[in-house]
Image: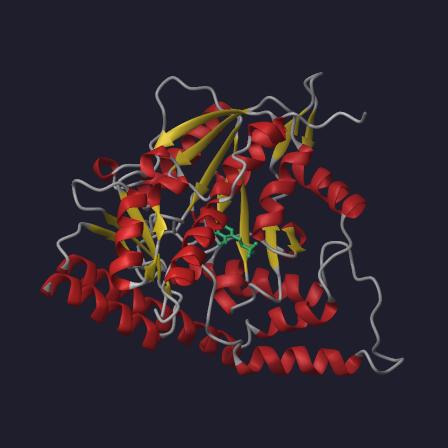
Length: 401
Ligand code: PLP
């Protein structure tokens, strides 16, 4: 019989959100009248901004005409979108990333996982704990050696450069899922120096960059000198422009970033990503790329930022409500996630059960993101204002009782 990739046996069987769903399902079967508010999963709820829908519609109409119909698109993505990204995200902010360095994809999650295809197996990989589970699981699937970086209250939940640890690949997510904390410029400088010293690659996940409000915080790793030699940046339209259903993201690989073969030869990493993508992937639909382009028009960008503001208002209100409950609360200022410490005698899952039973609120147990997440819960700010308000009044009722 055909043999399995045994690494798949080492990945946790049940996905965190499936476990949560089972619990919520059992609760709603037992309490059919309870109105459950979901603040667990990080999916957006605001509809697409009008300029994006207009872009989508216009591109769809083009498909009905022989002159404008599109088949397979260019391998890296259409130039109109790569130019818009290079211009709006990087060049206009003084960062030397060009359209040549940008590869359009169907989202950050697939790029993060697929990226491991072009690297050697058995790498030493540094991953934060708690963490977005995709980094951990994809590295287990590849059989890499994972070294966890504990992110705790005493280090502001930011991964610290290890003292005596060899590294080939380093995952950094800022603003962070799940903790909602953001890397400072100094912290990121430390990581870039370490990566240069180790000849390692940093995989920088900037899926939540649009939520950064504090101008002193870096939005791109390429704001740090030297990063263009060691960092791959992955971005997404999912949270910035509400594309969780539409699907679009991109990966930046600067032309000066090199990898080495076993015989000591250096090669540009971007060439192998190009080879991988052209062999295994046929790109994002034209209509979706036109919709993504619309997010960078003045009107489109302003509308996306309005949605970001909407979620950040929820985050602020939830943070205050949890503080009223006497909890220590982190994140929520430059990210759509609130990371709250559970009361002293309760584990993450116990407090999850408490909030589900007493307030009919679904949160995410911090322990689901790694051992260092034990004793925390994550709330997402992606619900509607109305649901957030209702959740807060239920939390206040808990305080009163
Ligand atoms: N990176 C992080 C840190 C995320 O939290 C998520 C989604 O929740 C993603 C990437 C996935 O992004 P996409 O929808 O572009 O695949």
